[in-house]
Amino acid sequence: MKGLVRRYRSMPLRSRLALLVTCAVALAVAAVAVSCWLLTRAQLRDQMDDSLRSLNVGRGYLLETTADCRDTGTSPNGETAPGTTTVFVQVIQPDGTRCVGRGSTPVVVTETDLEVAQHARTPTLRDGRTESGASVRVLTQLDPDTGLAVSLSRPLSEIDTPLNKLALLLAAVAGIGVLGAGAAGLWVARTGLRPVDELTAAVEHVARTEDLNLRIPAEGDDEIARLSRSFNSMTASLASSRDLQQQLIADAGHELRTPLTSLRTNIELLARSEDTGRAIPPDDRKALLASVTAQMTELAALIGDLQELSRTDSGQSGKVQVVALHEIVDAALERARLRGPELTFEADLAPWFVRAEPPALERAIVNILDNAVKFGPPGSAVEVALKGGALTVRDHGPGIPTDELPHVFDRFWRSPSARSLPGSGLGLSIVARTVHQSGGEVELRPAEGGGTEATVRLPGAPTPPPTAV
Image 1: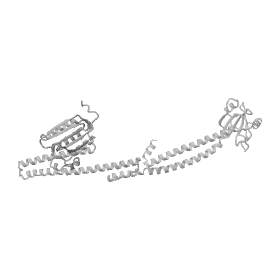
Image 2: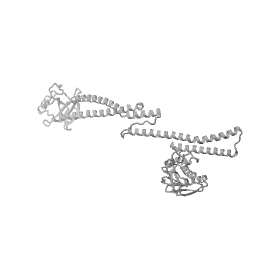
Image 3: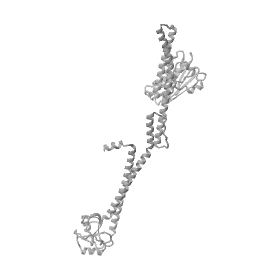
Image 4: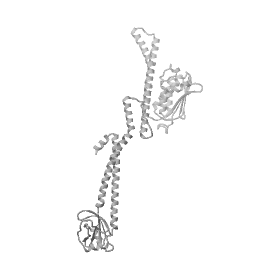
């Protein structure tokens, strides 16, 4: 049995589908054929029983049979009981003896026949046998005119012969039906699985050529059409992801090239000074070393931002939990104060709990505050407020032109006025990705009276974290 199961599972899907269709039709045809044969058999037997019950042998025939009583009869030779076709008649005495009618074949007398003859049983219908072993249908009853127990029998071959012919006919029809079902199963399998074959060919083509622009026609609303649309959506997403990845690599290469070139130039100047023995003036040497340090810091920040973007793009994230947003903002403010000691930070933080990854959310808020520190003029204030789930950070810097607002969250995009300032152009992109992954939204807009206002809205968590009181 296990071998058959393994062999079935190893068959192609088309063959399995055709086999299942064939087996299902074969079972249905067999059930119909057997039911038809059984119903016909029951109908014929009922008709034979009715003919035996309605048979009237006649008083004279019974008296003649009793008067000429004999225990054996002759085989039917065309001479039968009056008004019948092939009926065997015999009279059964209470003592168990029988009188076989003229032209009748003797039938074996049973205990039930004796009980009818002794008036101990009502008329009975049963299957019996003749003395030669032929099957007959027997009706034993009391004759109302003579009071004799009369046994009337008809050969079952009268219905067995047409039933056998019917069985052969049904078997032939069933065989033709099974063959037709097999052919229909193959046709159904080929027709129904043609879209699957096309999808398989498309998947193999993508795996072989990495061509993600391939699309499969999807018509209708059935499962195959839904699968085709899902495949098209998947390849479109993969193509978009690959394009974004290539764009990220190209942009990262471009951004890395500038600090690396400057860093190499400065290092070459220092190395040439050592090789030639021509000392660089102390102030110039100090400026070169400061530039090298700044470029190394910029490279480290750029690499960190790229790692953060690649982590969020690949779906890798830390543990998401319920956190106190006001506490994270307060911690980010402490870091911002160290980076902008010449600025004043005004904070108004109302408690608010959100579901997010704490390190990523803190990094995003730090990036927003870094922008405010970077563009805020010395002595100005950075206003931070958290009310009703909306975090606003407002600086008093030069602001962002309206035509540049649609690009502020693009990767590596930097305002022309900010290109001279340190930064990679990835900070706000990381902010947007983190906020969106937490189910919120972020926007930048010009503030009234000058400067820029950043707003982050995050949905509240249903319950505060367990440590909150």
